[in-house]
Image (tube, rainbow, N blue to C red; front, side, top):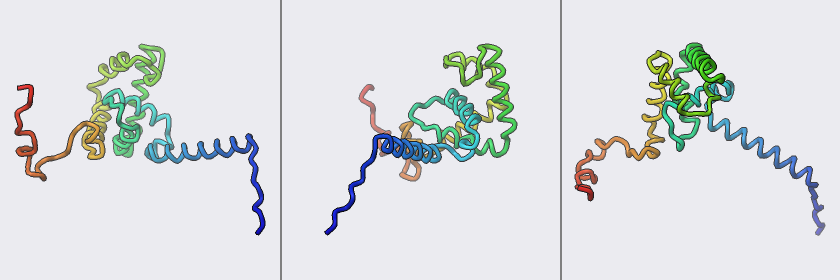
Length: 167
């Protein structure tokens, strides 16, 4: 029986290999977390993500759900959405000297959004986010919603007919 040769790794080689593996795993996880268009256009994705998180702020929801909600809108109206974001950045620079996403204060970003809340751009983004987030059965547990009850006989006799303790 022959002994197998002992493989030794230098510290430098070990760090190189682990760094490459880490970078590869991060790239693969990013590909699974963001839609394909967002990986191709990270600037547009990050701008829309900041806007989406300001319109419907939920820390427990991952970025992918926000961006997937906007995918149908971008497939149809990419130029209009980019123009709306450019207008929002222009307003932010005029008021705060920074692009919208660069404004640190959530209250200041909210003030800017209130100024554009009646524009078609804002309505489209808000509508797509609302349907994409709140009409997504995968996210319902995050909100404590168990889904439709009619398939299960309605709400009566499922705990909703009980008198609460505080009454």
